[in-house]
Length: 341
Image (cartoon, rainbow, N blue to C red; front, side):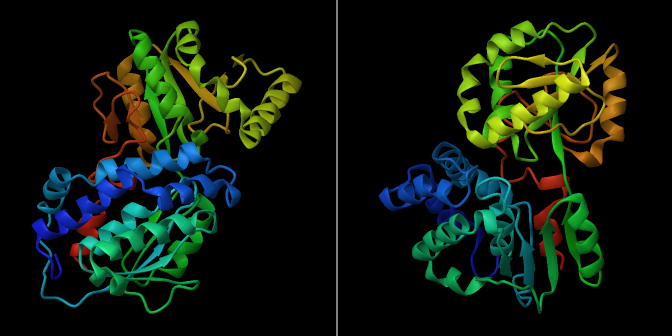
């Protein structure tokens, strides 16, 4: 890919992965300081994100991933404008990785909430191979680009679609994730579901915001299994959201369940407020599959062990925030898009 062969590129990126998996003192200092710039980026959350990328960048997976693509190594490098997400730490890293891996040049407009981490990680890559220094640029304003990959809200996506309509583009909107429970889950599986709900405080598109549950589902085992996540309520921003939504439900006399740090409310909507998970009962798994198919463009991934006939990615409990290299956002193959420009 570009001037690098797959083995060489996998070696460089896996070296970066190793460094992220075991942060040195300088990186760990950055991890500890991020909350001063973004209160949601607590040391635990940032460390989790850094190590998740480290785990993703293992040599075997890199070789498997890269070997699926056959870019024209003789063609001129394209300038790819990137508008990165800032909802979770290093949320835009995979897009940058894809641009670099395909031999293109990344014009990076980082999110103000997550501007330091991505710079630091890319500088780590440059220290491994100095040639990468010329293959990305951080910009305040995107111009002179050949293609765009932009991540934003449903509102900003309309602006992106208008402004970038004349060039090849990937425009990402809001998505959330769903868990489909059968009622036969073990305590361990329900505990792991807590990671899918609470990791990064529920701010990621891969966080579960909706539960599909059997009719008359007993939530007691679920609440007991996630009790160890109780310290999340000590985060002032999360606590503010919990208190606000709880007060709204109480004033409106909306029926809901409350374990002291999570509100669970029956609701047909797919997207719940922060510190809330919606649930919806079902009698037939086929009805669930039909619902998920209708909502597929609003779903990032589905957490379940049920045998589901759906188009969205299905992952095991606790794995929604552990994507592999080929788990593309919105199901759009970013590498395929870039190699065919």
